Image (cartoon, rainbow, N blue to C red; front, side, top):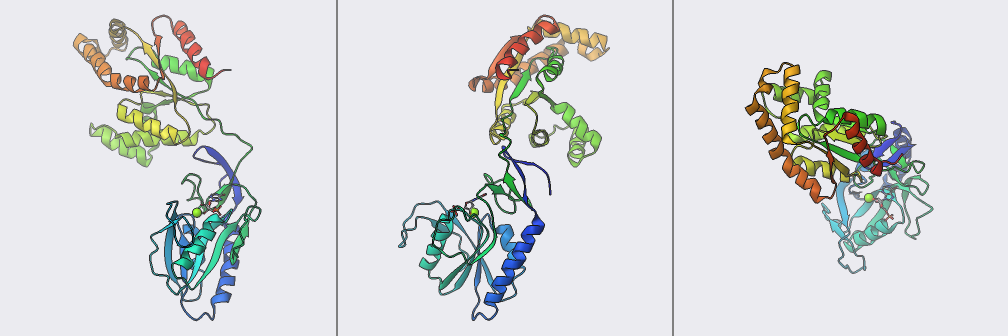
Length: 380
Ligand code: IMP
Ligand code: MG
């Protein structure tokens, strides 16, 4: 069982290991088997989606009497039935008229869901309705409806795993985890560093991570790391790069998502070289907002095109890159930069997070201005 896990924007800690669930499911299945051993007919095992999917699977493979399977989902749709119940059943896969139904639920909390469903099933003509729930929070359950089979009782705390979700996430964990109230997760603060070639992005980013404890994310570095490590993603990227093709957005975004997942304790990220297009900017936005986070500021290092020109040519001379000393090639790089980044800049201007910094001056002079800006977001 893993230690602390991050589901969306919250930490959860181990609560019920799978082995204990298995034992509780063994016991409840044995009781059901005992009760239905001499049953005259074929009951329907009714899985209440989505939460009960794992529990129903585990339970059914332990049942030893003839039974059928069906599943339903309850919508929050407001339609009135004869019972006054205001929920709608979606996708009941077989007729339950005159049948005995064993409802399989993941968890009963206040009991609202299960009492609604019980009434709905009788309304639809079920002859008898039995309730089986994996978990019950007895401190909150306020209804009179008898719960025939309860595998395990738990305290009134929020849990995830083994089918149970937090905002649709966390269902896939095999064990059950409980919300860790001891850590109030503070949202990370993310920044972009922007600027034409030669503006000193790399230099400033290095000083920023040193001073502010942000994680530097350069998509170029990430790709090279995946390729060097020979991961499936790296191999896919390498094949594309070798063919002279661009690595698709989804790959780059996947790498960034795993950087975010693997560094839950970082104060935030400083993105460098990404996003390059408005589509990427929109994806990044969606990815961060799913975590309750956002780009707090875009730091744009501004230097005049003439300075870019001189710096690129100077660098090319020092590094002896003959191609880069040709004026038309340098002009082309500068034009490409403007054409590509202008829409991304417009995107962030629209969100009110775009901040320009004069990139002329010594490294320390520029860093003084960058620091003053970041201090607004990350006070010491
Ligand atoms: P009730 O109608 O208050 O009994 O709530 C039952 C439903 O709430 C369950 O089917 C779950 O979808 C959800 N639920 C209640 N408690 C938890 C929990 O601790 N974790 C995840 N979902 C829960
Ligand atoms: Mg549920």
